[in-house]
Structures are given as structure tokens and as C-alpha cells.
Length: 120
Image 1 (tube, rainbow, N blue to C red):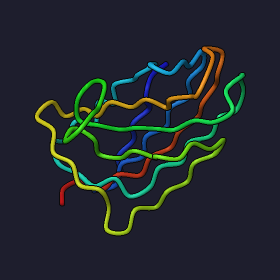
Image 2 (cartoon, rainbow, N blue to C red):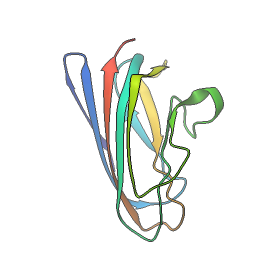
Image 3 (cartoon, helix red, strand yellow):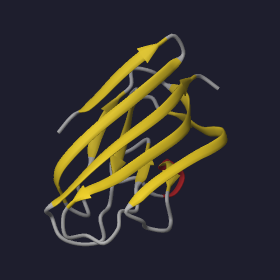
């Protein structure tokens, strides 16, 4: 499982296809930028025993508190959030950390797409 990061000008698209996803499964997304805005996140549970996913994205591993860039809050099979103005982030490592967080099992498959704008 790896994040495919593509950049065109100031626009970054991240595509992540994951299998064997459990509640604590996490992936590092090497963006190569230190400041940006998350504009949209689409996450789809494509297979597995879980009823829902409840994604979280942050600037540190196991995002919590002020390290959170985006947290869904209410689980669903498919998540599609457009954030008006974008959710800003600043990271010294140039990476974000993502957990799809299915509500059960470890046999889940999740596809996620993120749209990020470089800078604030």
C-alpha cells in the first residue's frame, strides 16, 4: 500500500488504494510540501466486513488533538467532503498521515482520493 502523489502546478492529487485495512492501519503520504490546504477528500470502502469508515488525516502519526487536519466524525461507507476554503496544514516533515478507520475487522479495502492545494 502506497500513496500515489501527483502534482500539476499548485494542485496535488493523492490516490490511495488499500487492502487488509484495520482500525489502526495508517499510511504516510509524502507530499514534499510543508504548507497546504486540503480541499476535498473522497473515501470509499470497496470491500470487507466493516459497516463504515471514519477517516482521519493529520500531520503526525496517529493524529490527535492539534495534529488533526481532517476528521470525519460520522462513519459511512462512502465519504465525500469538500471543505470550503480548505483545511490548512503545516508540517515540518512534508508528509501527512492517514487512517481510513473502519469500524471493524481487518479485511477491508478502501480507496481514497484527496485534492490538496500547495500553500495557504
